[in-house]
Image 1 (cartoon, rainbow, N blue to C red):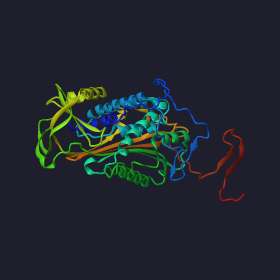
Image 2: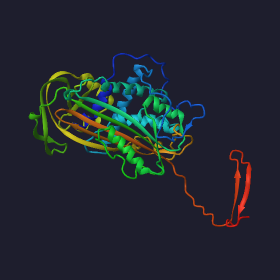
Image 3: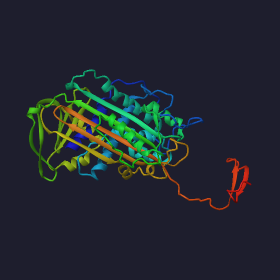
Length: 452
C-alpha cells in the first residue's frame, strides 16, 4: 500500500495542477520521429569554453512558452507512462519500500536529451517516452512553470496551511570543455540552468563536495552525500542535477492524540507494530473495485493531493502488476465524494535507485557506452553517461507530508587506448600545418645535451 500511495503523490500533482484555460495555440508540431531529429545547428562559431564560475547563454528563461494545451496534456501522459514503466522495472528487482520522483528523473534526463543525436537520441526518446526535441523542452518548461506557480500563489504563512514545492536544476562542466552555444541556450531558456565551471580533471573531490552541497541545500538537507567518494573522477566532463522538494500540510490533519500503536500485516503474513493515525468523517474522493479501495487525501493547498490504493488481502501483486497511466486515469474518473474514516501508519524512509542499470534494462543502452552520441553538447564524440543516481525520501505524519528527491547524471569522456613513449634515444621531429600537412620544420635530436 505504501509504495503505491507514495508513487502517485507527484503524478497526481502534475495532472491536478493543469488549469482549464488554454494558452495561445502553437503551430502543430510534426509527428514523433522514427529516426533521430536533431535540433537545427546554430551557425558557427558554436562553441563556448567555460572559464568563469558560471557560463550561460545570454538569454532569460522563457516564462510563458508558446505551447498548446493539448501538447502539455500529451507530455503529462507520456511522463506518467514512463513513471509506471520504471515502477514495473523497480518492483522486478526490489521488495523494499519505495519512494522516487519520476518528474525529477525526467527533467534531469531531458537536459541530457537536448544534446543527444542519432541512435542515442532515438533510444532515449523511446525508453523515457520523450516527445520530439523541437517540442519536448518547450512543453516541459510550460509544465514546470505551472508547478512553480503553485508555491508562488500561496501567501499564507501559517503552519496549518504550509505548502512548498521547489524544483531546481544545475549543471557543472569541465573548465576548457568546448560546449555548444545551442546547448547552453536550451539549458538557459527551457530549464533556467547555467553551466558552473568545475575542474573535474584536477580537483574531482572538491567538485563532488560542491555538488553534494548544492543538493543538500535544495532539499532542505533531506538528501546528503548522494555522490560517494570516487564517483567524480578526472574523466568527468559534465554533471547534471535536478532536485525537487515538497512540504505540505493535510487539509484534514490527524489528531496526534488519536494515534495509537497497532498491527500492520506484511505480504508474507507476519505482523509488525507501528503508530497508526486515525481520522473520522473526512469528506474526500473515494473509489473501490473488487480488488482494491482508493482514497484521495487533499493537502491544504489547492490542486495537490495524495491518492492511496489499498489492494484487497492477497491481491497486492495483481493490483501492482496492473499499474499504468491508464489504470490511474481510470481510477481518478471512478472516484466520488464519500465520508471516509481512515486509519493509516506514520512512516519515514528513503530509496536509492541505480538508474543506469534500470534504464539499460528498459532498452536505453547506447547512452551508457562508448557509442553514445552527445555531439549536441560538445563538438565531436567521446561523451557518455557513466553514472545516473536517484534518491527519494519521505515523511508522512499527522500534520502532512515532507518529501524530496534528486537525480544526478554524470557524463564522462571515453578514454582512448593508452600508449607510453619515452624519448631516451635519438628521434626525428617535424612541425607542420595541420590541415594541409605542409611541413614548416623538420629535424632530429641525436644528442639533446649538445648545443649544435
